[in-house]
Length: 152
Image (cartoon, rainbow, N blue to C red; front, side, top):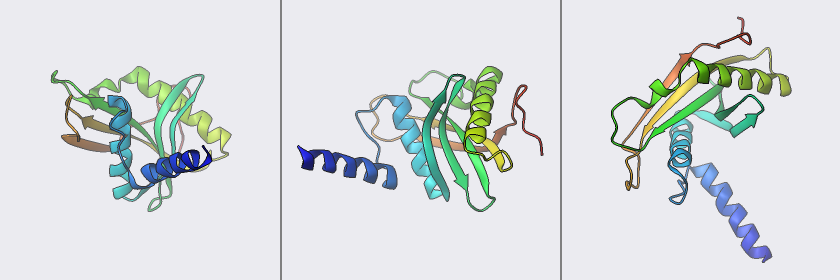
C-alpha cells in the first residue's frame, strides 16, 4: 500500500512538472493541463491551479519572471463543433469574478504591491481527439473589472 501511494504521488508530481495530460480527465481539466504545459514552454512558472474562494475561481496562477508579474489565467476549452471562439465566453461577469478572486488571492499572499495581469487561454479540443487542435494565449486579455480594480 505504501509503495502505491508513493508511486501515485510521484506520478502526479511528474505529470504536473512535465505537463502530462490525463486522458481520463474532463474536457475542461484537459484544457487546463494543456494550457499549463504551453505556458511553461513560454517561460511562465505555474504556482497554483484551480484556486477557489467564495466569490470565484482562478484556473491557473503563474509568475512571469521576465516582467516580475503575477498572471491570473482563465482557460476556456471548446470541445464541440459549435461555432464561436472560446475566449468570447469570458464575459464582463466572469471578468468581475476573476478580478475579485485575484484581489483576495493577492491580499491573502501579501502581494498587493506586485504587478498583475489577466490572461485568457483558448483551447480547441474536439471530442475523441487525443490532443488539442489549437491553443491560443491572449496576454493582458482584460483589465480588472468592478470595485476591486487594481491601480498602477
